[in-house]
Image 1 (cartoon, one colour):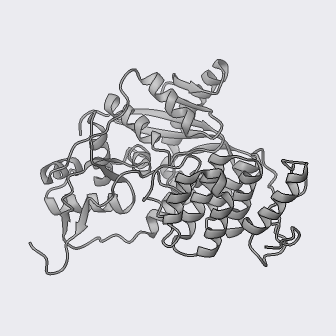
Image 2 (cartoon, each protein chain N blue to C red; image 1 turned 135 degrees about the vertical axis):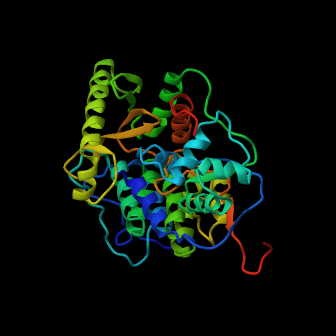
Image 3 (cartoon, rainbow over the protein chains, first blue to last red; image 1 turned 30 degrees about the horizontal axis):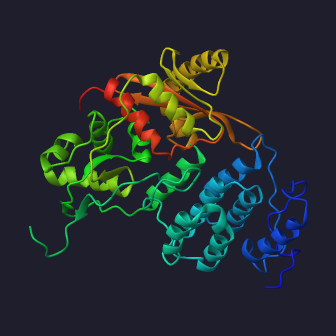
Length: 168
Length: 233
């Protein structure tokens, strides 16, 4: 895919440090444009609030506060890929799967492909299996750093409503 | 209320609950225990609802048990099986209870190291503290000794103030949360204080940075406190 970085770069913000400075930066930029952006969204800058929080915490809080905002999710995933933070990148992509459930398959596929190398094959396979359905907050193994998980790791079918006409 | 607990609360409210109708055990023979949200709810207020009764009962035992109908009646303080099942169903729908194929329990041994290990995981910055109602620091991680003593004393004051004003605060603020926080300009907590009501005892959990109250280790911490201080329900 021929990709340019301009209008697709939705995470860069003023003053954000670049992780690499050599030729690999350009390759990474192309790769990011292909996998870690939403085509057609134009420039979306994440504006840091006047907070003592670092950007990682701000993004996490804002994703928790507004889980349906795709831009925040993409910015958060980008942030952790750029800073080479595999555990946080995994938490960010897991939260995308929690937030949108079976919706936004295209976005989830694209972001998952973007973080696949970082999060490892086991985690990626688990999310691959959930591409069609998404994740439910109470349906998965604990993922450190996830804001949207309920931390439920067991089974939740304990009492049922008796079916109409069922045995009494 | 922290960001992730706001999400949990919103999810819980969005969950349709069958308030009427007949219930039955799913029959899977699971060993029951609270989820992190359930542990949070269980000790978040001294008001004893059937769901809170159930969650505290589950954590009064050192090891989780398979539930029979009779157990559920007793654990929920209900007057019959259907009322007990309804309480369990509500807890289940709120995401407060889960079951495992094998028995689970809190870590054994002295409370201080158990609490310290939990505190480390409950804060994004590894800053946490557990204090009792008298301002005694039970465990601390990330804060130096002087800061721990100071925050423990402040925790006791905050819990006492909350207790005096909680009824009016709930009306005035429109929220029943018991948590207090020191916030920055953006409203993000720098240090949060969560009163925990365990039996006749009151503790305060203080966390720096971004709290992770959805972490399963919260269950271990609350369960450890309830086994020791909760009494039998």
